[in-house]
Every structure is written in structure tokens, then in C-alpha cells.
Length: 113
Image 1 (tube, helix red, strand yellow):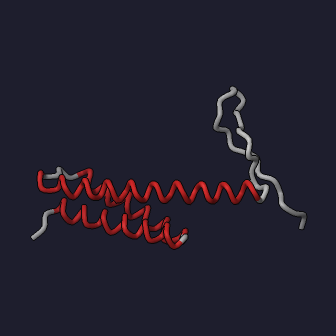
Image 2: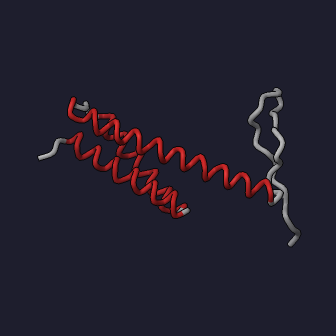
Image 3: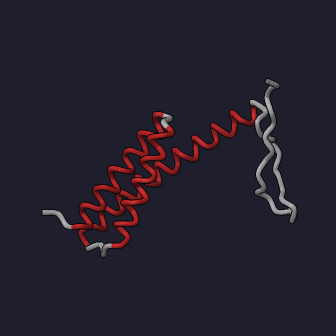
């Protein structure tokens, strides 16, 4: 019979797999649902004390999460590229009132209705 940490790590793995599938399918609703499930599973796993046997599984889940992170970063670059080429955001850097980078770019209207 599995322990509570095993069940928690299984739920985390399922959420990570669902997240990857949502990213590959460009399914925003599934991505939001899988991210919520991942956060719940992660919080539950963090509340438990992992045993030595869970160390290998944690390493595998960390690698899966990093792979999802790389895929998510790629999707963000694709969306930003498309928005920039559609004229929805400025391609230049934007600075806030204190001169620090990172202020939100201004959106532009593509047409008049």
C-alpha cells in the first residue's frame, strides 16, 4: 500500500503530464486546470515529509516540471512575437516612471469598429 507522499507525488505527476499535454495542444482551459491541480498537489506534497525512497521520484518530477517550463517559455515567445507583428504591443523596451525596465507595454487598436 502506498504512503501519503506516494499518493501526493502521483497526483503531482498526473498534473504535470496534463500540463504538458495542454501546452502541446494549445488548450488554455486545460492549462489553467492542470496548473491549479499542480499547485494543489505541490502544496499537499510540501506538507508531508518525503522519505528517502521519494528522492528519485522527486528528481524525475523536477525534470518534468523544467521541461514544461521550457515549453511554456517557448509558447510565450511565440505569442509575444505574434502580438508584436500584429502591432498589438510595442517591440521596444518600456520603462516605468522611475526609469526601471518592466513596465507594461501599451496595446494598440488594430482597427476601428
